[in-house]
Length: 150
Image (tube, rainbow, N blue to C red; front, side):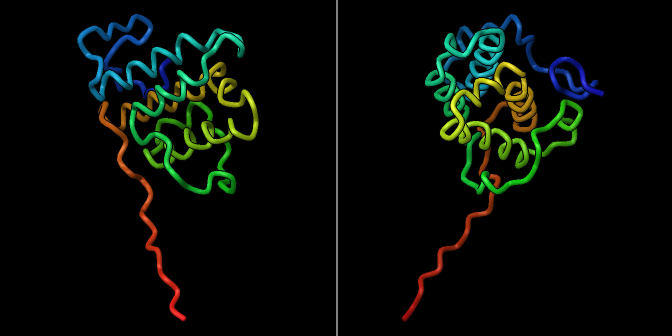
């Protein structure tokens, strides 16, 4: 069962994100997650023209490796419902976040829609829980590039 934060009941979040105080923490990996979570909470009730997309993407980038290269355009997985976040592994979280961020290039305001609907916040909370507040490791195996010999 999920609570309001998207975590499984019994998984206590580290902080109360509605009253986040990051004084003295700026620059640490954990505080980068906190900054992103706070920004997503602040942006959720706003209209599209009131959000700063550059600031949001910068905050996502500071978390470190939350967006990773993979063929998101051909990934058939639907966007997750709240109850699907509980068993979700880190690779799937990264895939969803990557698709949301990259889709913004093709579909204007699609990322902001995910902010308003809370989908991005839920994924970020799950990602932070799974990493323990550290940067996200590379979750996709590196493909070996083979050189063609003639």
